[in-house]
Length: 330
Ligand code: 5GP
Ligand code: MN
Image 1 (cartoon, rainbow, N blue to C red):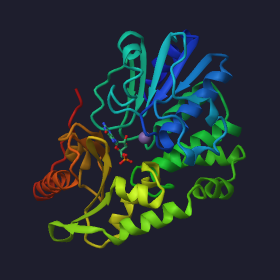
Image 2: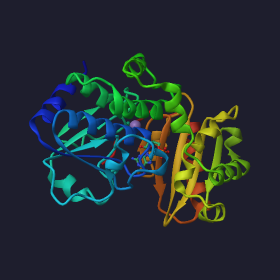
Image 3: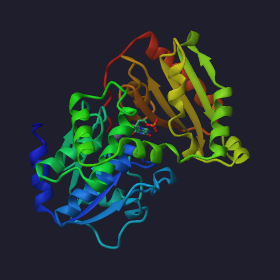
Image 4: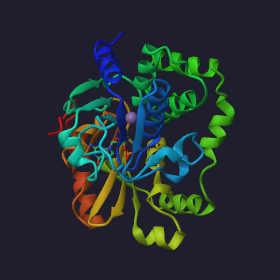
């Protein structure tokens, strides 16, 4: 068993009132690990508040218990905060910062460069999903992966492994998935619920972005752009961009796919890579972070072309001098 697991389980035993959070713009691992932790704590008769500054994205509105996730803070302070899937302490957003500065924190995460910002830390980049860590905690307490807990864990595992395709899929990941299926989750209906959450507008907008894909660095970089003009014209939002960046990696010879999205006074970027190419290293140069093959961040400019130049330069440099350094957040 991985050593930090038991101190974390003890910290859970010793407290009663929990606030559970994850990063802004939550993905399937953030939502799945929050809900899984919710079911674990509820089974242990704890008081739990689920907080995410962005709320529950629409594409997860089918997940059991999703309505428990609030985007406003409760009136009373919890005893302890569990921060899930956050590579640094700023990732949960601004609202929670005063409580994060004063209350004890359990930090459960699998990002590269997590600086162990918690009072209790369990950070392991080898683990496929933060949800997998929550599953291991459930096992310590003898809680079976049935019903809503199984669903939440499966959401987290499938999200961060690309439905068990990425290199982070380990035997242990599949063993946990097997345990969830044995407890009754049906893979087909789950996949259909997860898949059929889009709209025609979304499909058409994504088609237009694919149509306008650009290639740099002699075919090694594929770039997509999402502008506010595009969102307005097609009746879509930033949420509809989820995962599209991965399509860039389907091109033979592309090592890094990047998407840029206008977001107020900044340009948000998403990076994906194949094999040894470390995009966390690139994202960290702009104050972002992530994993070796999936990372993100924001560039403080409203100008798409400026952001494009900066990010393409940084990726090109990284491709020329392969670097496997992990950059730690402050
Ligand atoms: P995505 O590109 O899907 O938004 O994120 C890919 C990975 O990078 C995820 O693990 C996510 O947590 C991380 N990530 C995305 N944006 C940021 C950011 O602004 N800061 C940090 N530290 N990590 C990010
Ligand atoms: Mn994750």
